[in-house]
Image 1 (cartoon, rainbow, N blue to C red):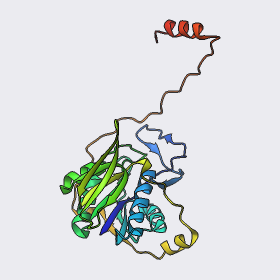
Image 2 (image 1 turned 180 degrees about the vertical axis):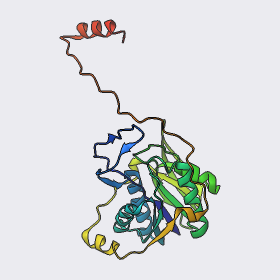
Image 3 (image 1 turned 45 degrees about the vertical axis):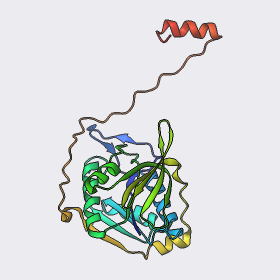
Length: 254
């Protein structure tokens, strides 16, 4: 069983982002970049499947500029076997949109025949939460999104997935191959040890030009303007409950 995992290079979750002067995008120059947190969870789950002898090979796939190899190496240090880097100069947080990403992954599926795709449920830069669903649609594969638990059957023909939904938890069974997207509580990613980091430098990363895959990467969405959220106003103190009720009524909130 070969498991493909998507790993996206995004602005580090702890970094403070700024808007470009033209208000068309976030300024990513001189900003710390890292593996998307949900993608990191997906890598951890794939590696755990390998440790359980369920998966024979874990392949980390990233799309983006040369620097995208950094997050592939991180996935390799966590335990992935090899990487595939799909190169493009398009901005992956805005220009390379979810449908184009899904098309690239679908093209790779036709060439490499994985048994499953494990993806983060969303990226923290665009928050689209669309790639897993679109990929499943393009491949005509079953999908299990927002996974908080994954169990593969002994015959490796199906997976039982517990999903986080608004009403609580839902457990479904999907035949393999399938697309599974990881939610926050699926696992806690491991820290890569120094020996594994050194081993990762020797693991193979294949490079593929996105243009060579023969898919349409044109965006379907135009960003008109990016702006910072409104500044939050300071609160005010009241002496007691009666004063609070009076304040809420005066402000039209009650």
